[in-house]
Length: 592
Image (cartoon, rainbow, N blue to C red; front, side, top):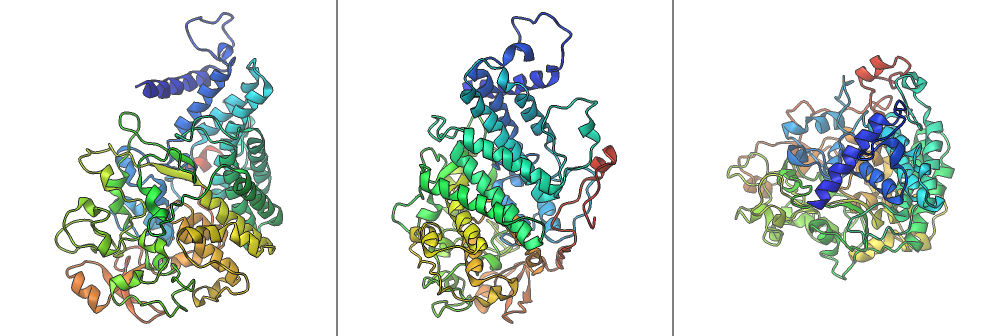
């Protein structure tokens, strides 16, 4: 109850301060009310104000940076878990997820108002800038004030970096505006200039945020280690985007990404979660309710009955399932891709797909033998996997590949609507390892030592062979991507490790690999084994042009059957029509 009171009182505080901060008509201030003139005095004042930023960040649809799970009915679409639906990792067919289907198929149009996760959230920037104008009023040491200034600047830089990734040029504002401010009618700031301001914000945050807020990661405020990971993520995006799109400087951004990631790796207090069990350590901590004290998790959103809850576990069936493309990217246990390994048993029989494969596959996609282990679909006694339309009900997928990386039956048994408590991981150490390896490889300076402190630590957790420079196989699946086998292998590792954590769509954009979204989205092999198992399915099939074999074709017969990716426009989202009408100085993105 106290947390609820604190949450809502801090929101009311921000509303009051934002609405009254320019009111200088009164010469005397009420003693029993909070006013802008009497508020900014103590460290607690600054802490309470910044808590408002965390509360605003719960609106993931408008401010999609610290992605968690929306509560209530919106749990069906607004979650970090569902962001991979925009990519080639997941295959939704649920009508409520048309937005994801439209966008991934290149069939989206210019919206009148902001899309989900789109051109909105500007009130968040205003809240930050109001704080920036007032933090220094507090009669406390500058170092103490700088902690909260750094926290605000981290969020401002992160917010704008996300907008740059979606829209390119942005309406960058770094001061509190009034109805007469000229910035309200200004053109968007060029991407290059905005990114320099973003980098300055992130650098300040890294320098001034404390290494530990004293909250025990229960969860708490983002510390400087979290800021380092945010900086590394943002810099990697900009460095690789510029490199592959020919958009500008890349070397500096990649160096900054590698430097930030390595500092976190070497000096931070975090380590990979590892109990020595390669068959469970990868997904074990993704399936629990309380991540307090987890050594790998840097930032997460906690859900607790009576405070904030969600319904993501029950709604997750709307996401369709994992794709054939994803499943085929898991290496065999000899460290070779399925296209080259003699250990690969093929996909004629469903269970064969899992044989001799990276243990992360079976910890991501449901193996039939694990149905009881996970108490899948609350132990309903049905046989899994199940395809859409198969008689008998139960959880059904569009691909045949049920996702179990996050699955927690205990968060559904006996629970009513919107009383779930599954947490959301925003930042974890594994991403820093992947960023470091990729940045070093893109700079052309990666060493075996670099791989050993990054990629190979992830492989050690699941007892997979090390990545070794000079002996990386050439996977024919990636020869047309125009990259070295080394970079292809690092990208593959990132896809596997970070599946369903909200990164794949942005990865495809920054690598200039949007054309991968034109490849038909497929599921399991439509073999004699599958035909016997899935009698009555409504899913259609097609011949895979590469292998010549028949597979489930997820979108065949739908509006999304023939996806398109127009490289002249689809790497950026369109500006909503209402935003253009309100400010004629803002011009639409190219091609829209």
